[in-house]
Every structure is written in C-alpha cells, then in structure tokens.
Length: 631
Ligand code: GLA
Image (tube, rainbow, N blue to C red):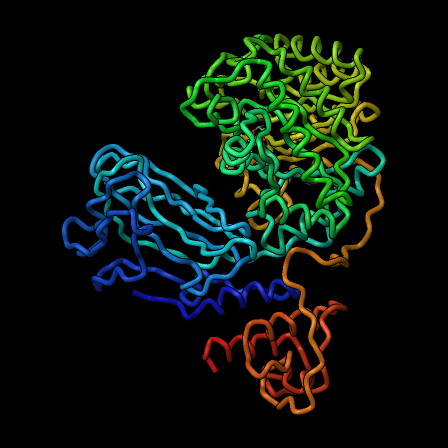
C-alpha cells in the first residue's frame, strides 16, 4: 500500500496555482495519497465507523476485482456500516481538491455510496454523499468524484456504505490530489458585461467554495451569490434544540434555528468581499425535515394542525432573520425566496405527504390541505425581513402554461396585498431533449414566459439558470452556445424587469447536473463556447483582474517579526524555527505580490531556498521539495 507522506505534492500544485505558475499534474504518482489494489494484504488505512459499527474489515483472496486480493467487509449490521479513511491521517488539507474512486461489490442488489463525514464547529456530525453506484452482486466502479473540504470541517473522513447490511468487497481504491487549475483572468467579467442590465450571480455550497480557483471565479464574474444548500430549512433547523425547548417550556410552536458552520463559510466570504446575497429558501416541501411538521418533532409523528403549523412557520421565519441579523447584519441580503416550488405542473397544489413518499409530495399541503400556507409565509417574511429585502416566489418549469397560470394568479393576489416583490424563474433548461425534439423550452417559449411575468409589474430574477445537453461534447457545446445566447437575448430584451441572473453552480463538474455539462465553465475553470456566445455582441468595459483585496475564508498569511535570535534556516520564510507548508504559502503570496504577505529580513534570506540569486517562484518549489524530503 502506498501512503503518501506526499501530501506536499498536492500542496505544491495548490501553491503553484496561487502564484500563476504552470501547475503540476498531481495525478502522477507523487499526488497519490492512498492508492491500493490490496495485493499486499494491507487494509490498515481503513477502519470501521465507530464502536456501533460491527464491520469486520480484512483482506481476502476470494474473487478480487484485480489481481488476487481485495478488501472484504463482513458482519455489517446496518447500511451505514463500512470502511472509513481519515483524511487528516493521510495528510489531506482543507481547500485542496481530491479525486476518489473504488471498485465495489455487494452481495445482493444494493446502492453503494462513497460519502464524507465531518464534524462542524459546533461539534455536530455531517454526512454528505459524494458518489453512488448500484452493485447487483457484481463489481462496479464508484464514479470518480472530486471533492474538497473547508477548514471549518474537522475529523473529515470518507467511507463506503450500502443500503443494507449485505457483505461488501472493495478493490482498487484510489484517493489522489486533483489537478489544480487557475481561472482565466484575461476574459471579460460577466458582471461587467451585464453591468447595465442586471446582477450576475451563481450558487455555491460551502464545500465547493474552498478551492481558491472557485473563489476567484466568483469574485471575477459575480455580484450576487446564492448559498446552494446552507440556508435551507434542513440546515437551519436544529432538532435537538427544538426538542429541548419543548421539554423545557412545553411550547411546541417554536422550532429552534441555528446558522451552522457551512453557512458561515459562505457568508464570511460574502461579507469579506462585499457580495450581495440571494437568500434561498424559507418555505419548501423539499430539504425540510418531516419532524418540523409533527406533533412530537419526530420523523414518524402525526402532523400538527394548521394553527400550530402557522405559529411554527412564523417562529421559524423570525428565527432565520434573527440568526442572520445577529451575525451578518453587514451582509446585504437583497433578495429572499420565500416559497419554493409550491405548484404542480397542472397549476394546483402538490400532493399531500412526506417528501420522502415521492411524487414531489408536500408536507405543507398535508397540514394545510392546499396552498393556503403561501400567503402567511409572505406575511411573516415581510414582517421579519430587514426593511428593503425583496421577497420572491420561486419555481421551475415556470414556462409551462398551466403552472404559469397558477404562479401568476398567486403573484397577482400577493402583489395586491403588497406582500411580494418578484418572481424567481429557476430556469433549469435543456438544449437537446434526448435528440427527440426541440429544446425544452425553446427560446421562443422562454421569451413568452418572460413577457407574461413582466406584465405583472413585479421584478423578475432568473435564479437557477443552467442548460444541459445530451450529445457528444463537440456538438453539444455548439448547440448549447447557440441556445444560451438565444436565452440571454430574450433575458436582455426584458432587462428592465429583470434585476438578477443567477447560474446554478460554478463549474460543470460541481453541478447537480454534472453529467450533462450545464454551466459556462468546464472543470478546468475554462470558459466554454456558451460563455463566449452570451457576451458576443454586447458592449462593455471590463476591469482588469485583481486579486481579492479583502480577507477571504482561506488562511491569511502574515508574518510576525522574528525574535532577535531567529536563526538562518533554509526555507523557514516565516522564521518559525521549522520549514513547513506555511512557509511555501507565504512565499508564494509574496512572489505574487500579495500585500499581506510580509517577510522579515532574515525570512528573506531563508526564502532563497534554491540558493540562486534572489527570491523567485523557484524558491517555492525548493521549499516544497524540502518539505517532501525530496531534497
Ligand atoms: C431546485 C432548488 C434548488 C436546488 C436545485 C437542485 O431548483 O430550488 O435549491 O436544490 O433544485 O440543486
């Protein structure tokens, strides 16, 4: 088994990217953190997931995927049982992107998941699925997944689990540092291109935000940001505290709300860089735990009556705005989605039920019997949102006429009462409909929808724009470019009614529709033909690229003056007495002329690590070679 002491190789790429140098490809051997075919019988890097996990993890020569040996996980007693690898123990670091995959086999038909577990700053455990695959008793490969984590996430591990307790076999496990790419700094900034029309935004999750390139991409192109998941009820509601409050007071109408570490990562970034935020979302049938609706706050309980639910809704909305006001009163939440996706395609309410029941069932409809929960949601949002916050109803397939009729009727009534400011048009579009027909919607259909909504006299925001194709890349990207351009032409035509256009994601590989490449940038952060096509023909002036001047959520590197007896030590740029990655990062920033990266006189001597004249980027490499013990 190869363990990498070679985390430095991954960092090397990261540090090189920081200063605009050509980037190494860490998928080469040095970037491998844990790559094993188990042929040596060593399974030590894997452990079961805590005391309650009954898994027995051992090597076996029974039916390996490659070679003669693989890892067997037997005696699992729960779906979540399985082999886990601690990332810290391998030398992984926050903000670095990794690639992971493995071949797996389960005894019966089963969904096998590669997931990540971490503890947030409040000590709460989180579990995120990274990739999954079905094994029907045969070997299958978990799709290669790219992921990273942030410094707020502790005890990070990745693990393999299944749907049930069947035996599991794992072979050809691989965890490597992902190649690092820089953004293109010399292309126009979208926010400048559209400065006279509307804000340009994107959605991002805390995990996606950790690589510097993603931060750079957002800072270059966006003047609006949406938190992809972190402000949704499932993340804002705290069941433990809610139960404790009930126990203490006997009051079952005050769900407890908490801003968790992941939300803070993005909100800190917005505050530090003055990026206005679209709040998303207060009331939704999905990503809202069912316990929020039940008498005893358990997922199995009976739903409460309308009066109780109205109080819960009011207290929840109040709680969200109070939590944000307490810590982020200086972040500009210029818009909030109050209610999301309440209409069925036919224009009526959704089916009543648990979201988990399928068919898009809504627990809100289960309690209220219809869509009568929408108006009070807007009333409460108006009551508790900071003055000036614009309130939106947000939905998808907003161009299907029956659904559109429902939305327009609702919006007309809310507008008459002064409760709504605008409509959020999600705009999850498809350029090729599996080659069977025209795109859906056609640009023409989309434009007709814009016209109808604009006639309402409300503000419009395109809130989740992405556009998939089902084709080979060359042809698909061509069609996508033309389609995006037609859609943006329609949007620009109605610019007087549209205040923001927000893309749902940053780069294709991080999209929720990653298999159909729906965004403007590919996984190498490179602008795709659709980027070119949507700026083509527009007159703009664009500012040259500037490194973010303000602090961001990444580590800031500032040296302290060394004490008088600080010694000369090759590579010890910050004069800490040792040579480590912080020296490489500091030097990389110094070379890149980051004004915050100060180096003392002795530090400068130490910085000349390759012992040639002067401090150059070659010294960064020399330091990383020292750390990796290659020198
Ligand atoms: C909907 C929601 C978003 C997001 C996307 C999929 O459009 O409004 O919050 O969940 O689905 O990622």
